[in-house]
View 1 (cartoon, one colour):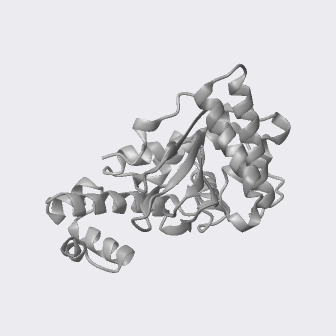
View 2: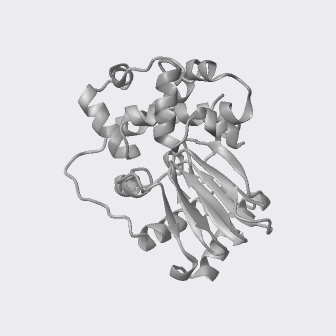
Length: 281
């Protein structure tokens, strides 16, 4: 079972479309994602936090964040999805680090996405901008790729100007290591059922333990150890709710020491035991 969105890897700088689906299962990916609500409401769940997106709201989801979309009601929904890879849309070098600070670096645990509410935006302008991106992608007129890129830049500038995210000045220089470092989450996802040592992960990134731990917390708002546990718990929950495997097997399959360790960790996370979770269903 993989949480990485292998079926939706971008082999191009962007992908855009409208959807009426009010459900998207738990997943993550390397690229950025913008949701713009045209009609109805959805619930976005990301890293144990959630927010309701209503008509006219705009949401930016950071790369590499575990997230899912859930329905709020039986009413119809329609929203735009714009996917793009910040590393491949040719950001001018002078703005690269500032874009990194806004759209790749999370500053705390609650910073799981950036939401612009309808009341804070020129919704007619945003509606034309988002619609224009999707139309350009669908029709593919001359220079459409350049036009989409320009519109995505405009959209990101709008988000940066409207968001209340605090950007801290720092004398630390970002390096290319910061970008390649992102692939460690894919490795954790793939090998979460095995024994994972933080030092081994640091070695894979050619970093010291302390630098790796510091960079991980800066980028993802939690320690690497906590993140590994979080991935294991989510995979265990999927097996609990959608299979009839016994608790011992699930504990072994998802990387816990034993069933006791799994039960204790799960209860601390959800407030109930795995057995109680399964009985709820």
